[in-house]
Amino acid sequence: MAMSSPRLGFIGIGLMGAPMTRRLLAAGFEVTVWNRSPGKTAGVAEAGARVAGSLEALVAASDVILLCLANTAVVEAVVFGEDGVAAHARRGQRLLDLSSSDPDATRDMAARLADACGIAWVDAPVSGGVAGAEAGELAVMCGGADEDVDALRPVLAPLAARVTHMGPVGSGQVTKVCNQMIVGCQAAVIAETVALAEASDVDATRLTEALAGGFADSRPFRILAPRMAERDFAAPPWHLRTLLKDLDMAVAQSGRATSATPMSALAAQLMRGHAARGHDEADPATLVEAYRPEGAKSGAGSGEA
Image (cartoon, rainbow, N blue to C red):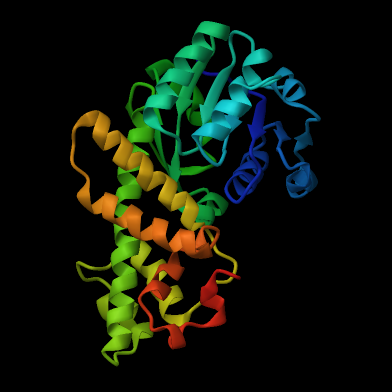
């Protein structure tokens, strides 16, 4: 049964979590927040969020617990670590995981939480980036029982342009992996494209104009190609390490499903090499620097932005 006005607890106030929290507050929800780095909660506190001093306090004040965390290991630590969510959760609550996590691990964690506390887990990774989070135009792909996904739709409504229920727990994470395979492979080939245009004495800053509306046009192309061509790597809206993590999950899932992913595996290796050269916290647009002659690389392309 859907909750009329659930109290929300939001864990993970980062690039995505902060704008999502502000959207929920603007929609009239009561939101309590907690973050491993407490200083990051200041902005949402000014917007009206209550800041919990501990996970125990957040869980006690919440009907729905939302997670937006960096990776699978952090999700597991926050939920099942000492004094984590599972230690204080109570039957009747729901957990909504907006993080991008490993599908198999998600299924395992959902079963563990249900056994320990009787709490339903819905995985709901998102696509659309910071701009989508700020505008409430994210694409959300859900995995979970019908009744749980339906109950959480009012919570997701202020965040999303579209919510798609893909199947049981873990299905949302598999769908996000598929999304990131397309994004990651596009990022790799867009870097090659911009570098080839430059090496051929073509103005790469005009590629998006030239290819607009054609088969090569896409949102990643419109975002990445101009940043690559203009060497605009400051204030990255996302990080290479995040995309690499998702591609690694795609390759791992392909092994479990016995489905080949050669292009995603190659994109992951290209990104791993770039990350190893000090670019793991940089914009994926810096991939183009791997193709430019050393003398042509700007200081901004070094990952120091």
